[in-house]
Image (cartoon, rainbow, N blue to C red; front, top):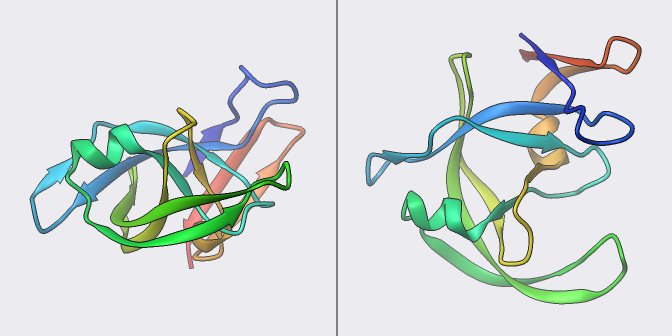
Length: 129
């Protein structure tokens, strides 16, 4: 499946549409845009999305941002489905982000897929492994 890069960034940023789910509660978000960040170890999801699906908090953790500062966060479990693909990754651990408003999918998610970042065409092609 091909996804266009998000042109609201300069340069355009790789992005996909996903649905966040809580299988136990039967709740899910609408399709939302998520950035693919190959430089991020983990994935971040704004708390508002996690509250919407009643995602269970699992544990507290400390992370270091790309700016170098440390902060305390909560880890949650959420199912992540690629929109318009029959591919769901159950119980992905995500950082509940209280500061940002964007979903960032890091290598913990990206490494589960075959991803081709085509900068010339400003698109990302994804297929399950």
